[in-house]
Image 1: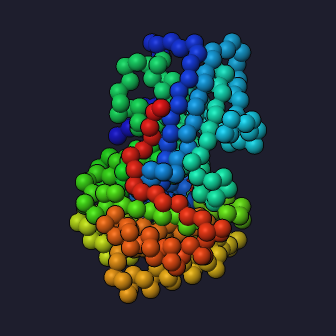
Image 2 (image 1 turned 30 degrees about the vertical axis):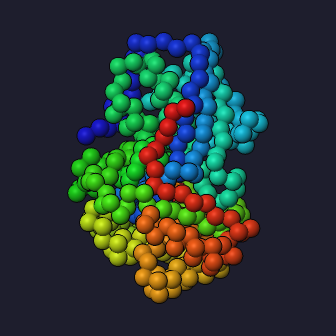
Image 3 (image 1 turned 135 degrees about the vertical axis):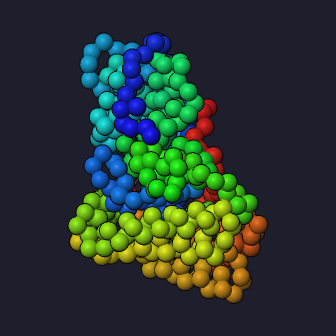
Length: 359
Ligand code: DP6
């Protein structure tokens, strides 16, 4: 099994004076949720997600060799200087410097853009950190031309995790497990691993329509939320439940048991929010329209007999999940009944995807 030490390079044989790379990395949606972490971005429980396709960050990394020590970088968002990103990137460089000893040797220009609207409430940390990590790995691959493809992607995920936990699940498709689980061979706390089995045909091309319920700034950041799992009265039961749900979810994803998939997915979403509501301090990230959407999805599923369900992240937006073969009907339902509940009628159609792409 790989350990942290395996990601520390043993010297470089290649050279690179200057150049640039450009990659996109998508967002992902967790089915079994990561909520709670230990030191060094180690998750308190394993999670599994679908990699998305349309919601992504596109990042160009320019590098130029320099002589002095210390990190040096300029940041742009959609082509304009973006100083507010500096603390996050500085922290990412600090956390990854031991694994990327060349970081101090270059001046970087990082230019990033998202395909989803700014402040839509869709977290860009997963796609953003994954896109930055994969660019830095492209540079490391120039310095170490013998690097295998497997190592390239594992280390990309490892680095992305150090930026933001869920980012490690945004490097490759189409379903990714992060966090050690004794039944899942190759699973690791250090990086995301491909789902070990073939997905049932009903899950290939699975759809995720993201309803933008509230774009407001979150009252509580994910990082603070994770911290509140320390000393949380239900933490241990929750972490054990996640292992159990991962096993059940794995079986459902392989067999195509849609009822099981729906019940685990929705229960995970509500449990995530239940953890927030039962922490100290407690908080509620759902909005009235989040609940209204959930009730309408339940009513529609009951009457139309169509397998559509929801999940939530740490926010008010609702991810509506359904197989491709009911897409037309579900989109009709969304337009007729749910769009009116979205802020400015906004929603984004996405689907399961393949991970990072080089331009
Ligand atoms: C609710 O990955 O954003 O989306 O590691 O502190 O950056 P940090 O947290 P982050 O947490 C995301 C939590 C979640 C559930 C999930 O994606 O599994």
